[in-house]
Structures are given as C-alpha cells and as structure tokens.
Image 1 (cartoon, protein in one colour):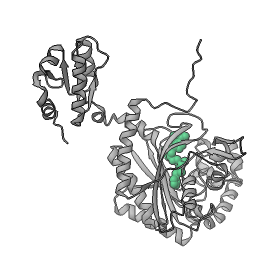
Image 2 (cartoon, rainbow, N blue to C red):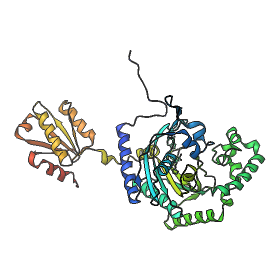
Image 3 (cartoon, protein in one colour):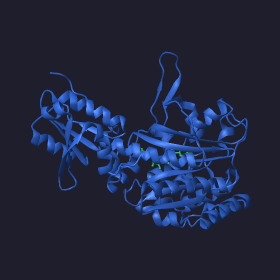
Image 4 (tube, rainbow, N blue to C red):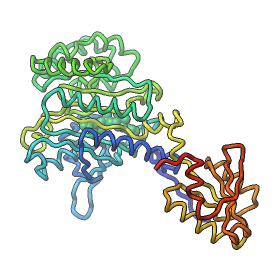
Length: 425
Ligand code: HAM
C-alpha cells in the first residue's frame, strides 16, 4: 500500500479560501505601506545561526529553545531558518550599506519558523509582514509606525484591538534597574516558578512577562523600569505618548511589557486583540537603536514591528469579510457537445472584458449545474445549450434577482452583464 504523508506539526497548508483572505490582507497592507512610503526588501529564509544569537539574544526563548538550526554537512556552516525578520533585515542593511545616502524605510514579508508549542494562533511556520525604519531617532518615527498600524486595522475592518505601550529605556538605565529587580525577586524567591528561577540572573526582565497566575500579585508590585529611565528616554516616551494622544489614538501603558527579544530599547509596543484567546498579540515591535552597531554597522537609530498574518486571518475569518471579493460575476452553465467550445469561447471573451468568470467544464445535469451556479455566489448565470451555440444568443439568468431570464445577443453580452451587476471599471 502507498505510504501517506501529512504536514508536520505546526506546519499548515493554506487552502484556497484562507489564501484568498491572505490576499485581501496583502492588498490592504501593501496599500498602507505605500502611503507611508516603505520599500520592500527580499530576504533569505536561512541565515547564519550566529546572527540570531547576537541580535535576538542568547537568553531568549527563541534562541534557547525555538530555532530550527543545523550544521551544513558539506561545509560545516551553522545555519538557522529565520525565527524573525529584524536580524536579517539589519544584516542586509549593513551588508549593502543601505543607509549610506540617509535613512531608509523597509518592509519584508514571508515565512518565519519557531519550534513552539502549537495552539490556536501559534504555529511553527507562520508568516509576518515586518516593517523597519533605519536612521530615525525622533519619537515621530515610533508614532508614525503605530499610526500606520491603526490605519491598517481600520482598513481591514478589525475591532476590539488595543495598543499596549511601554518604554524599557536605554541599556544604561537597565543596569541599575536590573540590580533592583533581581534584589526584589530574591526577596520573593518562594513565589518564583522554575522558569523564573532559571531566568533570574540571565534575563530577569523577561520574568515580568510571565502569565503564571500565582506570580501576578508579586509581579504587579515589582519595581517598574519606567521609574528608572534617563531624562532623554523619559522625554522620548512622553513625546511619543503626546503625539498619539493628539491623534486621538487610545493606548494603555503596560509597565510589564518587555517583549521576548533582547534588541529593544526605549519604545516597545504590542497590538492585542481580545478575540483570539491567549495568543492575542497581532503585531509587536519597538525601537532598537543599538542593534545595527552590534552586528557590524555604524551606529544607526532604528524602530520597527512585525504583524502576525495568521492571527489577522483568524480575525478576518470571524468577520467573514471580503466575501464580495472572492465571488465570480458570472457562472456559465453549458449543456451539449456543441455548447462546450462556445461556452469556453464566451468565458474567455468576458474575461477580456475584466469580468470574473467561472465556467462549468466537467458538465453535469442542468439542475446540478444551476445548483453550482447558485453556490458560487455569482450574480449572473449564463445558460448555453446547443441551440444557443448555434444562433449565438445566450440565456442570461439574474440568479439574485427573482431569477429573471432573457436571451441576449453575443455582441452585447458583456455590456448587458455589466449593466445588470453594476460593474464599475
Ligand atoms: P514578535 O513579537 O516575536 O516580534 O513577532 C511579531 C508577531 O508575529 C507576533 O505579535 C505574532 O502576531 C506573530 N507571531 C510570533 N510568533 C508566532 C507563532 N509562533 N505563530 C503565529 N504567529 C506568531 C518579532 O518577530 C520582531 N522581529 C518584530 C520587530 C520588527 N521588532 C522590530 N522590528
């Protein structure tokens, strides 16, 4: 017996219905990115492992336990399937001297890979649109990216989304804070779970992110990084907040928001949907003014974010949005040997006129084809039998309008259909 294969855990086929929504999302996001004048960059899926260790950080979940890494046995290179896009984008900016002539605004899209526990909204292969601005230090650039996202949610019709915002200061601010935080956690050692104990001296800030219920009240009373910011970092954050306020964009300051990647400084933010359960973050990002230099470039301020496409698609599926986009205008029912080539010819002709046409090629009974026409969602069904093929007149049935049926000449067919379905070119 033939062996059957299945997709790997956390890896999925995207079936046409869902792929349609991906396309809808893509059209909207590309149009908003154009409005803000971002340019697309294509990046490899595989990078040297060291790039992620240096940038994402060796004590993060991603690097410690989620990367798909291997050694290329042909040349001993250590390689990793990208778990995120910022590191590769920064590498590309440095390698190609993209900021040589001044600041640049880039975006990329595609698959990312993390060996995570799989659940709703959390996959091992997932897709992001990532957006990065290099050479911008002012809070206006953070604000612009946040407003870009607000504009995108609006154009997608998404609701129940909140913006969470925090500042984690600059590396020097964190030296003092880190000490205070470790002291506090040491004093509360008996409440810490195993994960927290493991992170205590390596990455204590990440403990603040814990969802463990038993630790919440202790974490809520922990010292807050926002109280340890330098004057410059504080000013940056206050300016950002006031720009957002002046644009009437509501946000919540979440002093425990630290994000799971080590490269951030100052601004960090997440957009969270309340309709997705525990994996509700649909986009996250922030400022990373020290990363370019860390991986070999000249000191360059930068900020960016990434959107998790699968989570957006889940929301769009709930909204059942965009149906109109995926429906054909016309469904062609055809019966008889002579009818088929004529129906095929008519289908191509109508497509030349920019109509969306679904042609029944396999053939079946009239009744079953009419059922398919109805199910397709088309507004108009064409009925073509041998007689219609012979005299070049086509039966046009307005299936959403009391089933009115008329015989229309081939020459005037497309105009007739466009008129009936209010086709706008
Ligand atoms: P991140 O928060 O790790 O940030 O990922 C961004 C978004 O990708 C998340 O908010 C989520 O929507 C989606 N995502 C992450 N992991 C998964 C998963 N396992 N399954 C499904 N969706 C997922 C970054 O990746 C940063 N590179 C963002 C950034 C760009 N920061 C600055 N520039």
